[in-house]
Amino acid sequence: MTPSNIFPKPAAATMQRVDIALGQRSYPIFIGQGLLGAPEIWQHMPDGTQALIVTNTTVEPLYAALLASQLAGRYARVRTFALPDGEQYKTQDSLSLIFDALVQTGADRKSVIYALGGGVVGDMAGFAAACYMRGISFVQVPTTLLAQVDSSVGGKTAINHPQGKNLIGAFHQPRAVVCDLGVLRTLPARELSAGLAEVIKYGPIADMEFFDWLEANMEELRACDTAALTHAVQRSCQIKADVVARDEHEAGLRTILNFGHTFGHAIEAGMGYGRWLHGEAVAAGMCMGAHLSRAIGLVDDRFVRRLAALLERAGLPTRGPVLDGRDNAGRYLELMRLDKKAESGAIRFIVIERPGRAVLRTAPDALVRSVIDHCCETEPVLQPA
Ligand code: NAD
Ligand code: GLY
Image 1 (cartoon, rainbow, N blue to C red):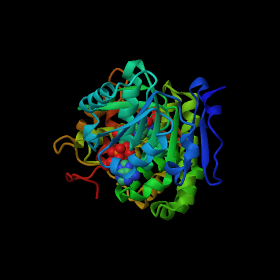
Image 2 (cartoon, protein in one colour):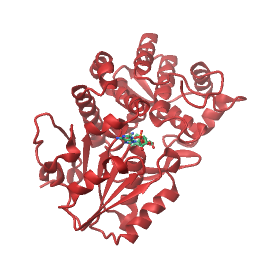
Image 3 (tube, rainbow, N blue to C red):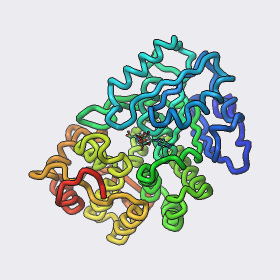
Image 4 (tube, helix red, strand yellow):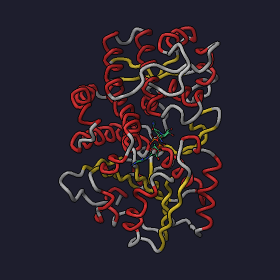
């Protein structure tokens, strides 16, 4: 019996389930309204001696008690540990704090970590689970749209290095992902928009019908309409699950999920972590990626304008910030050489070969410079408008 067979079929008619097929490491993604309070979900979580809920100081007062009450019947002990909130805390120091909490609570190899929060918490708690006693089980309980459609799925875990995003990490798959759409109602509008960047990403790289649907439903999504969110999260998770099932460790195909991220990671590191949200940086990065695709001759102007228009309607920036007033493009290039897709100093970009299909390509520095010059603000700005 594979782990995915252990999990129940969705109880409620409105609940969606996406399975990620990775042999013995397969797992389900449950998507629906009110799942945090649905006992039938939690009674099927992995067995273990105790549970540690890793969260942050913003999410803890909102949802940790509810999750702890659901887990209380399953584990002998349930503890909660809250990290400081923010991308700037996605560091070795925070990781050490999680290890300290695991040691202090007497966690053993059969303990289970529950990552309750956005992508920052999920990435760090997942990395701690990958390392502690050489690997323990963890479950993702994503509470941001971005985490529900992207970071909680696929097993990438990491912390940042001051010079580069997610440079230190591991692949470690969760045992299950529980996406309660109800928690998105407490999410600030700016964070919801940031999540929409990763939703929109799935159109150009894999599914232009989904892109059409997003164009028709953007207002509903921004208003947190349950039916619209259910479809957006389900379709995003399905696309990501299909890609990860074919290329778990990013030997090739999985790199397409990084469309916009090479430019975006440079923005996040170059501006200082936390100034631009990850999704905002990815949005501006996707515009640069689309312009680069056009400059190479792969897509036309109409596609570039369509992508920018949808990102704008999602409340996202479509232009990159100035990272260095003297040589802005040079600073982008310097930061991008640390990208994980770079090989021997040659930066590799995800470009759109045709709408709905993405590929990995190198590009001459001069061309990339011209794209950056064309796509960036001319004056320094701390946050996107
Ligand atoms: P985040 O984790 O910082 O969360 C955003 C903010 O929302 C935080 O202030 C958080 O406390 C708050 N919050 C979370 N849930 C809330 C809720 N329900 N109500 C109110 N406030 C809430 O940011 P994010 O956008 O979720 O994640 C970004 C991170 O994810 C980045 O570090 C990025 O590198 C990472 N990421 C990882 C992957 C992956 O595959 N592992 C993919 C994409 C992004
Ligand atoms: N967010 C990119 C990936 O999971 O591969």
